[in-house]
Amino acid sequence: MHASIVLFGPPGAGKGTQAGRISEITGKPQVSTGDMLRQAVSEGTDLGIKAQSYMENGLLVPDDLIIGLIMDRMSKNDAKDGVLFDGFPRTINQAEALSSIVEISSVICIEVPDREIVDRIVGRRMDPETGEIYHISFKPAPKSIQSRLIQRKDDNEETVLQRLSAYHEQTSPLASWYDEKELLTRINGNSSIEEVGNDIAEYLLNL
Image: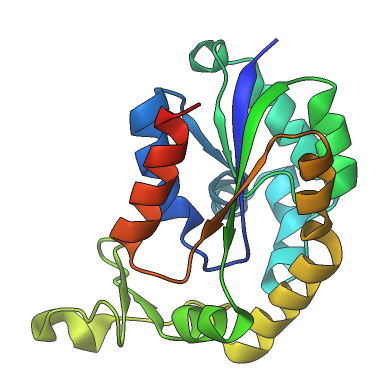
């Protein structure tokens, strides 16, 4: 069995940023179903085509599509000592399915208020040439490239609010589910990237 870590929180909570640091500390590869799905969409795979309509409307992709991705990923050599699940599972049904194929050793939940999430996501801008993500307030791009920045299609307030609604309805209950199994640690995500990272590092080093 694989002793893996689960990292979850609302969209825009900084999971991707903190996942990199967790991977460095633990040596476990980061597994982001969001990245895997976006790759499948860009490559036009059968899974990508099925998932695209859900993602564009800010809806959660069905369990069977996600579980298929995870099972394939866990068969890779670098997953033999466990992985870091970034933003997965998203539902209790997924958590139950995951627990049947993977041993989870700890679960980290990054908590951020909804209004802060909206400000974070709606202000994001991407450089289409490098893929670098900037923010109009928190991380402004150099003036020389600002004219080419784009706002991703799903980074608008309406879609963000839909994603938050789906998160609270389907994903938030995971906190109680994992808490009952004595695996959950809550991290205050409404502070600087460095402070959040330090809190997570302190928790991991004391495991």
